[in-house]
Each structure stands twice: as C-alpha cells, then as structure tokens.
Length: 195
Image (tube, rainbow, N blue to C red):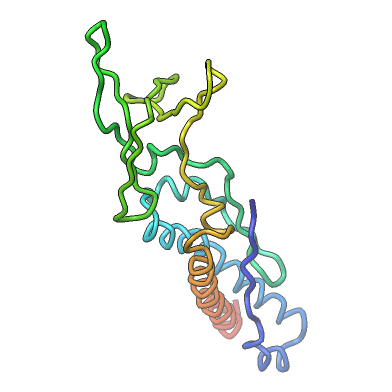
C-alpha cells in the first residue's frame, strides 16, 4: 500500500529561469532527497498523536520513502496490528476446572483517550507471543470459526478514508515541503561554496 506525497516546485521558478536545466534538476533532486526522511518521521509522529500505538510499532510499518522527479513515494505494510498493540488487555480472568486462570474480554484504545471494551473475547497463546496471547472471538463452530481481533493498519490509517487520514496526509506533505526547500537551499549553498 503506497501513497505519493507531491512536492510543489513552483516556488523555484525564479531559480529555474536563472539555472541551466541540469542544475535545476539536481537542485530539485537534492531537495527531494533531503525531504524524504521527514515523511516517515512526520507520518509516524502524526499517527502517534491520534492513535494509541507506540512510535516503534508505527515506524515498523512504514518503509523508507523513495523519491521520484517531483514527489516522494511512501509505502506501508498492509498487516494490521492486533488489538494487543492498541493497548489491549484482558478485562478479567476465568478459572478453569484445572484451577488455571484464563484471560477473557479485552479493553483497548484505537484512538488516544477513548477506551473500548469487548466481552465476547478470549485470549489464545500462539507460538512465542507473550502471555496473555492474542485476542480472538468465536464466529462459528470449530477452529475455522476463530477470528483474531485487529485494529486498523498503519497504511489504511494514512492512505485510506480513516477519521484523521486527510489531516495526517496534509501535515506530512507540509513538513516534507518545508524540508524540500531546506534541501534546495543547502544544495545552492554548497554550489556557491564551490563543492
């Protein structure tokens, strides 16, 4: 899942008129190269301000951006985090006949400051996942009816029709535009110094 961050180069029209085309292209490329890392950083920061996910978990799903001739391409992993990543914790535990407490229910937050609860959930210990495991609900008979519970993926939060999607893209584009201008200015300074 990818999205393009379009960079406005119209502010460089004065430079375009003065510089030769090759030098202008190099300045634009230098600006895009300088701005690219800011896309991942800003997107992660903006998502973390709205959604109850850790910065490390968000950055894990954003690949390092690549730049083209006039834009920055950012790609997201499509795998959504489980409700556990959204602060999911069991609501209570039920004691089995063997005297073992099994966690049931889940309390989690998709958006910061908004806790949600689900009672029809049990926790399943899978592989190396630490206790209490991953939250599941039963949607039918047998193991085919088990459904793991996930929150929205980072890609759908940023690129889709999510609650804050448009604001996230706008803030990230604005930050990239500022960094682009700085990158072009740094390139021009380096050329003016002769190296």
